[in-house]
Image (tube, rainbow, N blue to C red; front, top):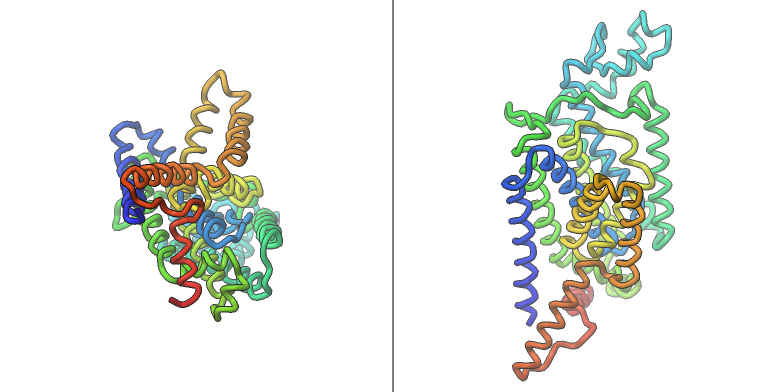
Length: 391
């Protein structure tokens, strides 16, 4: 029976991959650009599922890592745009530095040149890509080391991560001469690889997002199937037991917290590629909480479920918000859907699908005279316990 479950699980992934790869045959460039953004949101669903569903870490500041990745690549693309550079400066700096400069610096650009040192390395697009992964991971490592080494857990982790994302958002807004504040980074060049420019409305750009999501899903699933992933799930269920068995619980928590941040940072860079802007709204409280809603609806205990939840919710939102009859009510409808899922499907859509499959398999096994599997016991529980005990 376990083999059947594994086969069905693999089939679900393959069907999902086939669907997202086939979309260009049915939609125009406008909708493909939209779906590319939704696929990026799917990556955020995977990141939330990894930290919340598998590690038991409710991170309400995932927007911090998403925004950090977005800004890093956006800075490189800003400098690569010839229409976005300040004229008269000795070094390539963005145009808004001239607009936001002090009155005395308008005629003497020395102040702009002095403030541009943070931008100089981003003239290389490769550096922006590198920092788009490294910066979120470093931030997550510092934050995770402080929290998990001090055994902070539960709602306190949610409060700390929430405070951090709001703090960084305020810093970006207050540093307007360097970051352009509320306005964010716009008028960006297209992302370029090997001389090929990824126009956000090209099919190739959609496939860049699609294949990136596929790779993220596969690698995340393989990571969760490792011994470290199983120990992490055991830690989620009972930290004291895993600690008693001799495992370094904070080390596992920090590692997967950083892995989740890396996925979010990568998603932030892809979002800049398909949307052509970076904004401090990426670090809004509402956006970080929305990510949690996506994972809750899709199923936080499933990487694929959380991914599908993010894509599904955003597709429904776009469709309803553009329907004349639902313009005034679509937010209430989305809220009702979320409340209904929490009340009647606490494990999300993925949990409902898994329960349905288990029920059918038990009925089939019972009809064949075989002994059904123990009810209410997840298939991964025994391997998780075995990994925690060092088997």
